[in-house]
Structure formats: structure tokens, C-alpha cells
Image (cartoon, rainbow, N blue to C red; front, side):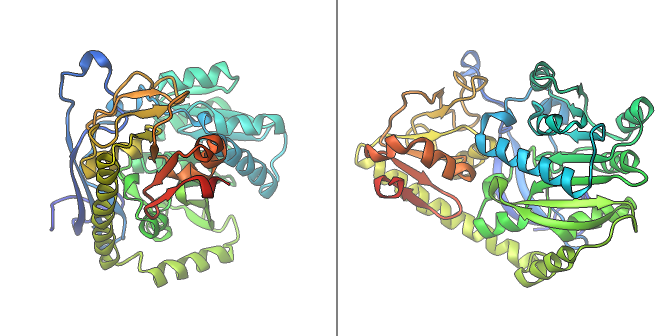
Length: 412
């Protein structure tokens, strides 16, 4: 179906919607017990494809102030993510020959987990994040952080205070940006004349390959391929010169960007462009098929959960991530099928997941017959951590990238 929507990347009105997940609440607005009787606001959650620049995007924007000024996600909770940021920091310092005193700015820095990896290497770091509750954690951990929404005006303030950055980074935030063009303009100012911007963003190609539709939620306004993100940078006079797909979050695109001609174009750019052409990531038909696979997954997962229920077996959700809210609400999964969600993040324990209203309990001591693993991108870590549970007969139901059940044999 065609809708009147201006593309967030290029401004085109040629947007075709291909996946409608219905009206859903904001995925990270957890429900406190004293509001259990109130219905939270619901908003459309639909994915569209720009026929001109190929950017995939949702149409409805919840104001950023409502989503990010008090945020329940903390980067440092997961060992896999901490290890990933440590590797990324060491690699980027080596790649660009950064020296003690080099200036690094991280946009959407959360609790400072990534920036903290640079400090032992002697880097001068600055984080920027709008969520006061997590920036307080960063500052307490010794990571200088501004509690602000980054944009061009904030970039000018940083320039005036400490000059240009040698490296600007953004991980897990570049698809959140309501002020997308102001942010890119600000990045350009910060890296002039010779600096580098490195962005890590969930890769749309990986989402398509893995049927990872649960990465779609209101915080994620846009979904990138190399083609669509380089088109965005080019509009602002920036050039992508290196690219890779890193394994975090089920596959993230890491793109290195600078001013045109300042850095040699690496062969990785042409290779990734070839892969995207071969896989049809620039074609609407690919996304229509993706939508069909989402509903096929729904039917299979609901049938499995119904079977567990008929057999009298308990199922809890393992983790209460934002993506989990999308899966539960898109598929109509309620406490009748999954009784609780378990968490180790104290900000979430005692709350309820939006929409589905699964009560969130402390992960410690929870031993249902099976767990539905909502944070499936960390499944390898979970299998190791919960080896005793699986050896004792417990099961992990993993919905993505393909529905499977992990039990005792896999744990061994």
C-alpha cells in the first residue's frame, strides 16, 4: 500500500509499506505496578521502503523526549557487549594510529561502556546521551558525559570547548535519530578536517536473512544497508571508505566515514555493494518476502507455545529487551502462554512489559520448564551461563533466526 510519507533520508514521497505490525506501545516504557490498570498509549508500527534511496523506515515518530530521557537499557549488563566494545576500541586505536590524548566522542554513549575501553589506552573521551539515569552511571564510572541529544548545535559547543575529534563513534543509536540530518551535519563538523566517524548499526541485511523483525520498534526509525546509509552521508558531503559486518546484535553494519578524498576507499566497499546487489537488498520484492516469513514464524511459534500450555509446562521469557516487546505484541503472546519475563537489570525487575503485560521478575532462581529467549542475539552467552539449568532438563526456545528448542544435549 502507498502512504504519503517523506523519506527520512532523501525526502522522497515514493514510500511503499510492506510490513504492518499493528498498533503497539513504546517498547521500553515498562509498566509500574501502580499503573497496571491503565492502558498505555499505542502507536502504528509499519515498515516502508523508499523506492528512490532504498532506505527502510517506520512512519510514526514518538517524540525523542518521550523515549530517551529516562531509559531502562544499560550497555554494561551483557558480557558479550562489553567484550565487543573492548575489541572495537583496541582495533580502531590501532587502525587509525591514535595516541594518548587523542580525542574520542561517542554519540548515544549510554553508561559509557564503549568509552571506558579507550581510557586505559590514554584516550581523551567524551560521551553524549540524553538519558540522565544512565549518564549518571557513566559519570560515576569516570566517563565524562553530557546529558544531551546530539545535533549540530551540540557539535558546535564541543568544537568551541575542545576542538575537533580524532574519532567520533555511534553504536546502537544511529537508527534512533529524529534529528537525523542535524546529527550527520554535526558529525561532519566534529571530524573536520582529518577525523573519522565510525558507526555501528543493526544491519538490515542481517534482519532480512534472520527474519529478525523484532528489531523493528518505535525507537528504530530507520534500517540501513550500505547503499542507503552511504546515500545519506553523501547528501552531507561525507564519504564511506570502509565497511564490515560485525556479529553483535545479530549482525551490525560498521561503516567508516570521512571527508571525501581524505581516506583511501577500501575494497570492502565494492565487495559489500556486490553482496547487497546479489541478495536483492535494494528491491521491494525482497521485503515483501520478508514480511511473509514473519507471519510464517508467528504461526510456528504460537503452535509450539500452545503445545507447551496443553502439556501443562511453564514458559517464562528470558530477558525483557525492547525487541522482545515487538515479538510478544506482534504475535499476541500474553501471560496465558508465557507467564513471566526474567531480568538481571534491576531497573526492569518489578515492572511489566508494555502491551503483553508480562510481569518482570528477578532472573535469580527462576526455573520454568522452558524459557522463550527474547534476547536471542546473546544465545551463546546464555547457553554457557545456564548450563546447569539446561542439563537439569530445562529448555531454551529460540525464535530467531529460526525457531528451535535447545535442551540438555545442546548444553553438553
